[in-house]
Image 1 (cartoon, one colour):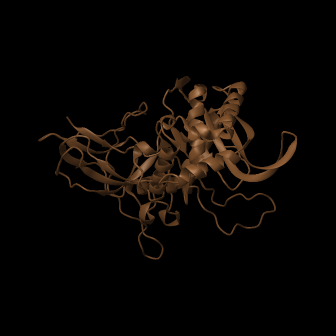
Image 2 (cartoon, rainbow, N blue to C red; image 1 turned 60 degrees about the vertical axis):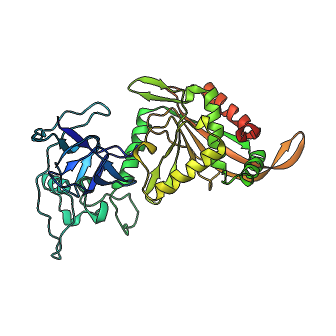
Length: 391
């Protein structure tokens, strides 16, 4: 029976990926676990492995952009013919979608006589929408025009309407690639949730002292973000209402605490996940977070490392506070601002303490205000009496 080779989802924002290279030729025998393709996305480069044995039969050319969960190739039994690839209705989550193999199309020429580098899907879409590919800004791998670029160009008015009184823009950039994916994700999050944010200033003086002491006694460095991840994971164990996901009208509760750590890249944002963070020490969280962050910057994360998560932390150490936006159906996200020394009143005296603002955004459909406030107060206790975080 033919086994489909589908485009995997390599991140919450991913909608499509590029087959940058087939590592097998048509008719080659493939063994389960062998790499059959090199995939490029806005955030991750990935070697796609075969899930079974078979004879390799690609459906798309190298350079093609393929939707997540769509079939890009088949692994066939000896003498078997590939299934007829026809468009299928939208699948349930996790179900592969069959798509027909794209016909080859000639690359369009630029006005200077050169060739516009573009994927077959982009050329077909441009022909359908009447878009001149030579006028489209490319965002795909290797400077190729991809389908998202064509859609963005088609959506652009011929002459962009400007607010009254503003000067002519020095540059107009289409919203494409990872920026378009993030924009779509943020709009979807706001539209599908009832977001409510809470702010609390906490004293991190003792936490700073203990994390530095723990770092000096180990072979790794425990940063403030690592210590707060541990504090959040422990607090979620006591307040499991926030360790939930809302999906299709159902509240999904989890006993395992998987914390996503929002990580800034030059071109956008990625959220690698610390699995079972409540069962790990602060030092283990530090090592894993540093490894994930380093590989995220090199586009070497694995698919399972950038999807899922039951709670998210976003750290912006350059501002006092901010309002984070919920991600991927999650019920809560914690925003962490910078820490700085301030005069505060303690036991009737003015003293200097290191203070930090925490901002918690919740989905009010799932989390009541009193529950969110109780979580923040418990988190404050964990942060201000932090000895248990470093056991």
